[in-house]
Image 1 (cartoon, rainbow, N blue to C red):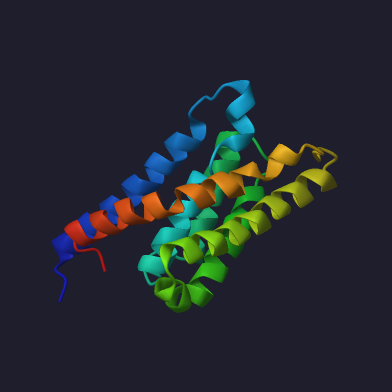
Image 2: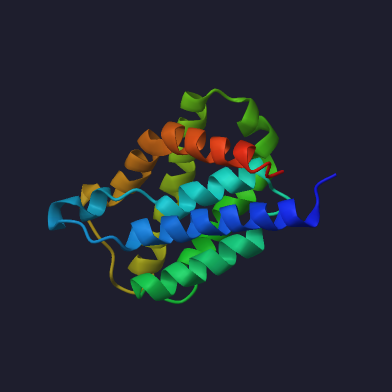
Length: 164
């Protein structure tokens, strides 16, 4: 049985990983690289929804989405909607996703993030701020490429701090 102190420590690791993801999202990039920025918060959320779906779920995704909306000055609820749907899909399929090899997980996560980007584009288009640049879709691709390394780092942290 996990003690209260171990549970709190695990919660702090999860919270710190989300803080780091939000900081990486806010990190300034050169103009040419802005559209290539990985969806840090989304892939960290997917990992924790896969690893501990009873602790990180739809409510956490909604809250993170609202934080991203405030950080990025987007319509309040835009990122919240996208991250909530990603968390829903991940929690509904986490047992299958865990069984997949890392490369197959990366491809599936790429599709999840394409769906996330489609939701963001849909809301922006509804507001008259749509884009026609093909690099709009690149965060899904770069996130897919980073998934194996992020998975290994977060898995090792989860094991080290006995988060379950």
